[in-house]
Image (cartoon, rainbow, N blue to C red):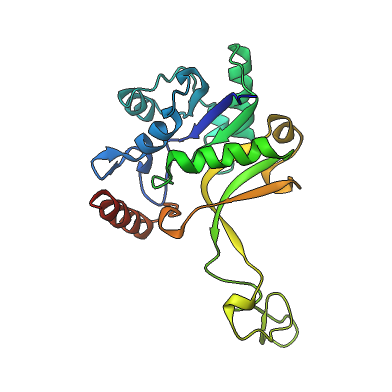
Length: 235
């Protein structure tokens, strides 16, 4: 069975870390263009790609990238307090009202410009192979809770390893630890209607390499991502 994904690209106007970062030029193109291009690759029906924004300028930039933007995110969902689940549900409701047929939701955050279409396709294939709530992109964690991630003991103030007995002397002997990289979320529509992303019990990881896992939140992240992208483009 061929999946019918609904792609949602969230891009509200407010951005405190990097002002207007969703439309700031990243190696000559607006940051948001990279997520739009990935969503449209492979013959995706443009009707199934929804830019969720409250901002007319961001919408205009997206339209300049070849994406029609008929939907506007409600102002109540464009604040710092708005959660991802509510944003996704509102876009889903709008799509259903418009008669857009979909059976899975793919969330692509604009802050992951180094993701490629293969990352999305691998996540979709994994989703289709198992009955799950979500497939999420991950990368090897920079800090392993069994080896070099520590907490402060509440009674003594001393450091203690976060998990395990602290006797491991080599990182490779520790269980593998993953962290979300923010690039790809493939979500069961029924599951998101019933619970938040963090409460979903059936989550499968799809691994991405560290060099494509930069999630831009600060100017340092931006600088690193541009450096990696520029090196990749010259290979």
